[in-house]
Length: 288
Image (cartoon, rainbow, N blue to C red; front, top):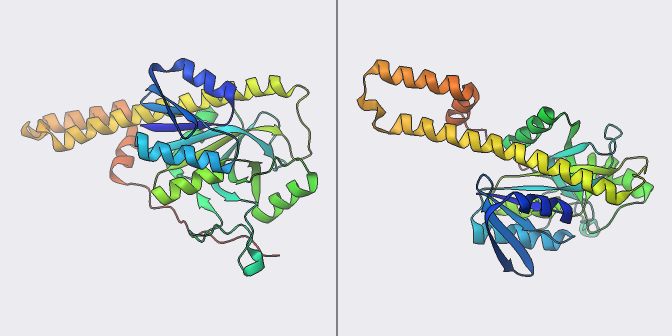
């Protein structure tokens, strides 16, 4: 089961409309919509780091999700990202976390002693592949979060330069921290609502609808690939562990090559060669 936390109401409404056999559960003031969309849970998440963390932790404990996708909008920091294009997090950080007064690096998250938390590389790759298939330009890098709606140009420039961030928003790093302590893979995907120069769409409401449609399309494309991969991996596991080995070697080879032909070498590779554990101890940003 995959958890989806969306920051936009219009986006969540679109996802809910696609669910079948919907069950609504209200926990800690948050409505969770679970249903059949490639085994995916969709949850309403309030604005801000704390509410998003509550949502993510509940998904882990109550719904037993195996991964979390966080989507929404963000302010662009990179000159390579234009309005409507997408930032994908390879790492997240909290730009408003500051205990430098006691000698810590700015951004250090107390309790886990990290500035940057790595998103899951396999889910990052799924997001990049889905965007490419849909013809959406993306930039992958750091996404910074904080309990601030950052519209000040100087503050944006500082976050970009200090944390080397591509975009800034209000939830992703809190979700990333919850996923890190629970050892749950995650990815953060954000449509750019205003670019590095401060240029914003003429109609923000109209833009939100377009961004929501883009986020839903990306999410569904990722889930389709994840679903196909899980089916392929399940077939191969059955081939390896099941009664197929009672067949002749020629039958086994025939099924093996059929598996590769139908599902691609990537599924075979992912089954046997799991991606190495992410390096959570990434170097901290430069000090000031």
